Image (cartoon, rainbow, N blue to C red; front, side, top):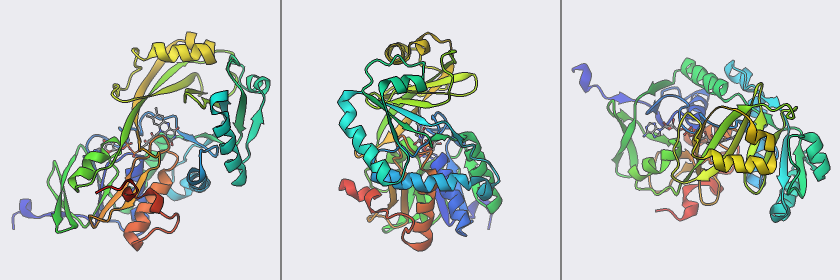
Length: 375
Ligand SMILES: Cc1cc2nc3c(=O)[nH]c(=O)nc-3n(C[C@H](O)[C@H](O)[C@H](O)COP(=O)(O)OP(=O)(O)OC[C@H]3O[C@@H](n4cnc5c(N)ncnc54)[C@H](O)[C@@H]3O)c2cc1C
């Protein structure tokens, strides 16, 4: 038989090598499924996982997020043992600025966190400004401080899962776009790609902001709400003397300081450019917000920046797990603004589902696509 007619096969094809696709591939290999093909249309980590604030937090916003957070803190602490690479967690603390319009909701979040045993302090406006003297103190009703939160080293996490997965046998194909599915009745038979089909019984949809397109190949409608968020890297003003991550609860404007620079983020725009440079058309909006909240940041020199998509869903929960209509089609998408910190959850659930036919670490029911009444 000529080599060209030999059909490529894999036990599982993962579509998309962002942090969630890499995590899924690595977890599958760890579970013993090593014949995994991970296809990426561009390069590993070049999608939403490229521009993120990389926060890992216990100050979350609801029950399921709180449960995931407890798990991911443990998993990232063990990351070096798992992969040989350091997840690079640095504890910075997080400080949420609460304005009166969102005070009730934020108090409820505080109650939930405390019920989960998470240390959460309520601060007066004076205490807030003492903790972060770069703040103007305007508009603040109270602050919520979480000392245990911090920042991850996302590029190193991507390196770790990539390298460890490849060592375990996962094949990672960059520059290879998945283009469709072949079906045998209601079961996945192959994933079509720009470099030929890969025969398989399982396809994992980890295509980030393109997950709706991948779902459509299986006749599914994944209701993604892709929203662009911008990041500007500005020179650190002298008033900014701590690394605490500061976020305004009502507007989701935030900043955190690294070594020489401050990362300032904001935005939930529908059709804005996604790029590896600061979006200067958006800067006036960002600058106005800085002027209100932390004027020194508005005047700081811009050193860089970029923008990325947060693939949200209508109920702000991810879409994870199997679908009734198509056997072998497993979702791991819709992670919105929490896909970095929750990458160990997504990968673990995908591997459990494929290996055991069910999940055990978390009940996947609240995250199934069918909650949207999808076809
Ligand atoms: C500015 C910003 C700040 C953020 N801050 C945080 C934070 O602090 N903490 C946090 O946890 N999360 C944060 N997020 C959210 C986080 O970045 C995302 O939830 C996460 O990156 C999603 O990962 P993913 O693997 O699902 O998607 P992606 O990283 O987008 O990966 C999907 C991949 O699929 C590929 N792909 C798509 N279609 C195909 C196809 N047909 N064939 C092959 N490949 C395909 C894409 O090229 C891409 O590489 C932030 C996001 C933004 C934009």
